[in-house]
Image (tube, rainbow, N blue to C red; front, side, top):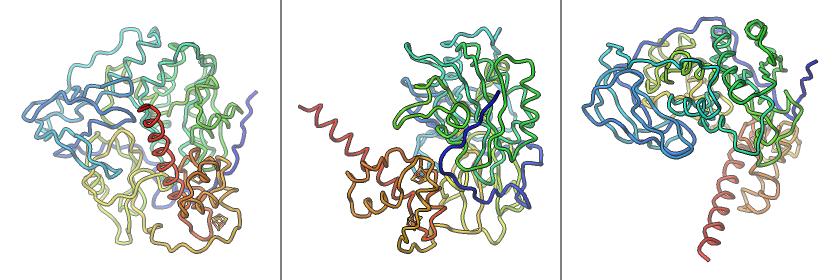
Length: 448
Ligand code: SF4
Ligand code: SF4
């Protein structure tokens, strides 16, 4: 019997998945390839890759152009065939310059020879982890944590449950929804690879109950698969947060600073499982992903996009922006990043490009009225109003005592606040300063 738990807090923002912005009802279409791609050599949490190509090199689709370096890394591959015109720092969505390989597309779409794994379901944990690293598989829910590391369970730890994240709780986005509708079998196949390699008993797929068609197709795909089950979760943001999902589907609480692995759980996005399936059964590296282009664009859609495609190209593909557009977001409206320019590339962690007719940051804050709504909304049981107060007074020790480091930057508090206070931003500042102080303290200790 299944039991689904309800995590504390949470909000229910306008879903934006209906009306003109609807994209969930339309099949995914392959976006036309751009004439030039900009492929950052760091599209994951961890160390940047080492460039394997130079200016003037001719490359094929799927060719490794960035070699993973260090333990926390994942390879990067060419997403089009053509000529490398440069290897230089390029602006990315978070405002940082990242060394990137720029390729002029020859539109021949010539691929390297793909080498599928002979017997994927017999892969050991180490072999599956190595495959994920070489094929550039990272967490596609947005976290971009290298999948190879997640699959390499350290000695002394054991895993009894694999959770597949199909919640897609961010408003407007429907990339995972379409993926589940169109590739349910392959997602389940990718999950089976993990199940077999790690000897996991339970595989639970969590999907918000505003996607019951996806629940149905995923249930069908799981039929006859030992240990697999699908659970419909209440539609409540941030249901897809890792800790929230673990609690909802297992009733286990990840402690502050801890990982799901501490509780015998691994969480993978459905897109990640799909990428793993393709890596093993097709020998295909991660060179594209589904991206929702929505909001106030003239033709919202879910596109299969080659990594490195500039945002402006996708906007043009969607027939441009409506006049009412006032800002662009890379990702979802709750946790995504405001874009100041459109020449930045789509990377592996990009689930959506949204055009919005409101600019939330321009709304003036007013004084806190001590209503407590931010506390009710916080899924991490924090007191955002107090953290905000301390941050504004540079009282970071006090903010630390209030567990500011546990903030997942979900934005629920700011969304719920009637005074429109910039609570999430305050938490971000608190985390940055507290971490910086900790690093400095550790360095001082090391000096002695
Ligand atoms: S942004 Fe941080 S403080 Fe605000 S609701 Fe989310 S977890 Fe809580
Ligand atoms: S929701 Fe806003 S106004 Fe209400 S207590 Fe929190 S910070 Fe203050």
